[in-house]
Image (cartoon, rainbow, N blue to C red; front, side):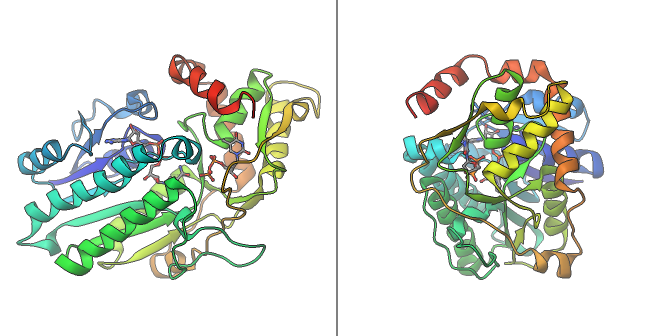
Length: 350
Ligand code: NAD
Ligand code: TYD
């Protein structure tokens, strides 16, 4: 039985990756290690928590002694590392938290893996899940490829860029079997409502204003989260050692066009008159250092490993809205307590 450590498995993308691996590979033992920050939620894994090949350990990847002990107790075959602080706005208010988890936490995992695996690196894989934001911003044309130079602008993307460099360094210096993927913006179920799409769904549902930074002209390339999880599966099992893959949906939207589409879907779902939800759109002060455009060239992944996105955006967005509207308890649970405080600080006086 293969033993795989998945970090950050209680978060948005991590929970989809854990679910896919636990159900698709009953012969793998999946161990999910997560600190359960505000973004981590065991309710995301309710449907698989009693599977015999799944277990959860609460822990902080910044704690080197904990990580080192974890590796010596469990003798993992491989690691899929997703644990991170992931929200750009929070990184602007508290960059050090991002350095600690995203950089130090990743190096702690690399060190522990190196110590345990050093006699036989080729039998173990360290898969680091990263973001397209490390490449910085595009102008109106062009796409990020795997060879685009790193040029991060936010504390979040700078910390992810740094962690990518460390992962490559452990491959190049020590010979660790490491792979990295850099993915575009994800959307789907279980997404914490601080990010654009779930925050807008929540606010439209509650008839609250939808805050759009600047003029809403920034462009993101949206991918359905289950397609990201499938890409991670394909890359984990088939990539050559040291490889990097970009993952994206060929699905670019300006924020304002995306929100208009979302409002149209929500009007239909909530039996509101056409155009009713769009009245909630409110332009607010822009994000500092706001990258204009992200767009991914995923042809390497498509050509070498045969992965393609499965869903059209409108279909995926509608499924996402349906999930939020039928999971009120989940939403109420994650928006109680600290969420209200965060919202006030982030959006009042904006
Ligand atoms: P998320 O914020 O929803 O989840 C992060 C998880 O990591 C949470 O469960 C949290 O509790 C856990 N965590 C945070 N700090 C920890 C620590 N110190 N120790 C242990 N666990 C800790 O994030 P997400 O959107 O699911 O992103 C997962 C990964 O994918 C991240 O590495 C992110 O950079 C990357 N990524 C995200 C996107 C996106 O659109 N969300 C796109 C590309 C790449
Ligand atoms: P976000 O979901 O935070 O993801 P990222 O910053 O990692 O791309 O933001 C997506 C886009 O939406 C980005 O251009 C910022 C913008 N945005 C808003 O206009 N209003 C908001 O309230 C939020 C959270 C984001």
